[in-house]
Image 1 (cartoon, rainbow, N blue to C red):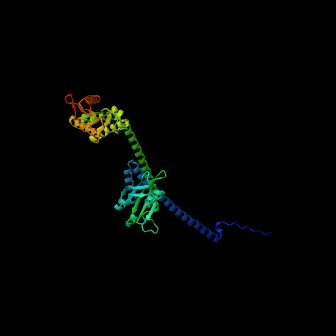
Image 2: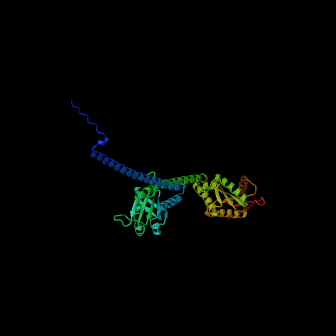
Image 3: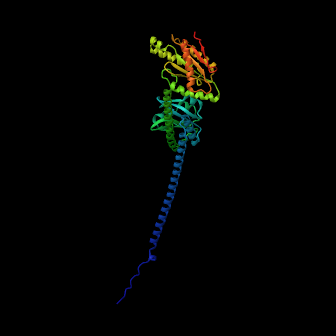
Length: 400
């Protein structure tokens, strides 16, 4: 009986040489692919890091400019600071900012830096739709112009400055509305890259919001000022009213005491107003009252003295830095000026007094008021002085 010994199993060392070589090639291929992937990953990571740095820089720039323009509600300051910061950011020297004129289809140059004089003069006001500025205002999109480019529209005034080889217009928007346009100029043709324009558009939105805030503040301020004026102004004569008279009188009395200066008060009454109304009508009577206000305004120092409609036919005049003698001259000019207006059978009875140290508002007004009634009871159209020097009333009858 013949025994057939079994073949031992093939071990690792028994693999065919061509199989080993194939495995090596496969390994090299995998390693090469891994190296490529690692290189691509590094490149992608570097690009991503660069984009993050660029985006961070853009956000820092936008935030810095936004912070600058939001510090003020003064439109002039906002525009000047915004233009300066943007020019510095792009290392430019020439630019301007236009604002939309409310209620018109025009853009007005409000701030500029480095612009040639003829551009400032001839392009100070631009119609919406006209030129670079007008197209930006019309469409709300940035416009890039390069001198000499075929088919490129060119402002005639700018064509006279070939040194300004390129410029870009950026909308200053808020709530979808173009509030203004910022124009930036360069001495290089290819100065404004797409990423620059993208950044400028973002900055323009921040400036547009600041412009709107300044406009809203100005409108609110003007409305408040108008309401305040209405609350202290007599609607017929335009003079301040009785309430404002007492407020101002207290202030001027305090200032006179503090500075040691004289101050005088006039109380003015329109003589025979009731009879004039009965004979001529109330419209003519209103004209006479307006005439008193005109006479007072014409004869006092603007921004120093002040006139008031004190009552129905009574007026008051505060004369800071005026002693009795000077006040008497002012009172006489008022009386004569009204007389020359030619309202028949009327005149002005004026009581005058100078501030006495230590007295209060009621005492001063009462003394001037009493002097006015003395003048009226003496026939009217007179100046009566309640002298602060000796306490005696001194009539002045200069009526023609």
